[in-house]
Image (tube, rainbow, N blue to C red; front, side):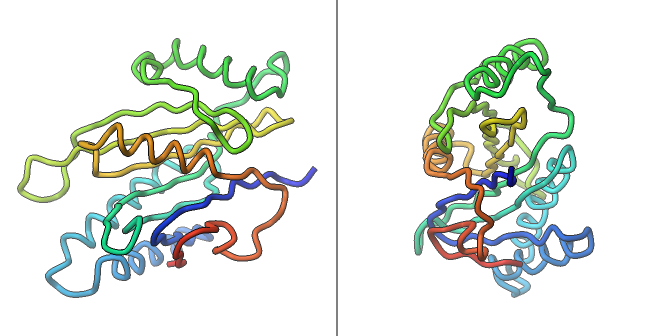
Length: 219
C-alpha cells in the first residue's frame, strides 16, 4: 500500500521550509525570514521573530518524523496572518494490535490516553471534521517572550490528531500563531484548514499541488 500524504488547501501566501538536511533547514529558514519580512535593517527584529518561530517548530517536530513545515504571512493581500504549520508523525505514538485501525476507535483510545497523561490538554479536546476522517483537536494559549522589551505575546498552539485509515498511524498537525488573543477565531479557521485537507495516495507533482490553493514558495 502506498503511503498516505496529507495535502492542504491553504489560502494566502505560504513558504515551505526545506527539511532535506539540518544545513538546508537552517539556510531555508533564513531565506524565508528575509523573503517574508524584507531584508532591510529596520526589519531585523521581525526577521528574528520569524526565524525563532520556525526553529521552535523544527525542534517540536524532532519528536517524530517531520513531513512538512510551512509559514504563512497573509491570508489575503493586505490581511496579515502569521501562522506556522508543522506536520509530523510522533515517534512514541504506537497503537496496540487490540485497538484496530478504525479511525473512530483510534481517536477514542487517544482521547482516553490524553486524559491520563495530559489532563490539561484533554480539557480542551474536541472532535472536528478531518480529511475524510474525524480528528481530535487540543489547543492552548501561552505567554511567550518575543525577544523585545514588551511583556511578551500570547501564542496559540492548536494540535490536530489525524488517524490514517486502515493503519495504526496517527499524524499530528500543529498550527502556531502569535494571534492568541483571537483564540476562538483562529481555532475555527484552523478547523476549516483541517476539514478541507485531503489524505491522498498520490504523490504531489509540485509544491503547489501540496499546498493547492494560494501562493506558495519554497525557501
